[in-house]
Image (cartoon, rainbow, N blue to C red):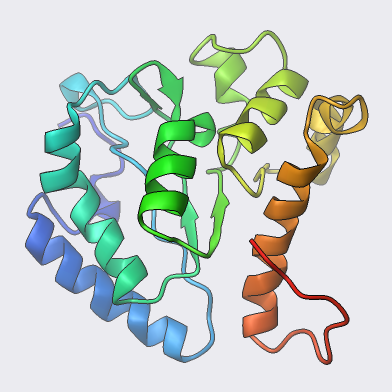
Length: 200
């Protein structure tokens, strides 16, 4: 097996993974620690390689891949989730409207925030070739349902900033992303006497 992240999983059985995931996540969430299950979704490709294109039919996703995530959200109370590096049917997971907006936020009513894996947003440019530059990849991810662009150094924000200042990122989408993060922090009691209603 060439997949270098096998130690980050609970195995291949959706029931076992669900039960172990809920037990782990629920314990932390009860202590007011935001948990971030990963990687959403299917971060393993043919030949055991991660970060590669994934082509799975929806039935397989629904029966095998999705159940542990649905369980840690609905029963475990996870308030965050991390996207995977790979693409799903040609669209990077961090910018996948069907995965993040339709499935996760609309169908499953997930109220937490979605964060990318480290450097994953730039993967649209350097790995998947679905974006011409970093700024565009940032705009694609926010439109696709990502709430937080996670990088490994603060200065990396400069790579994505142009899309947030030239109108490519819709203000309502940005407001929604910020609100989801603030909502999670408010639930932790990090804000006292909020002056505005936070809606996702």
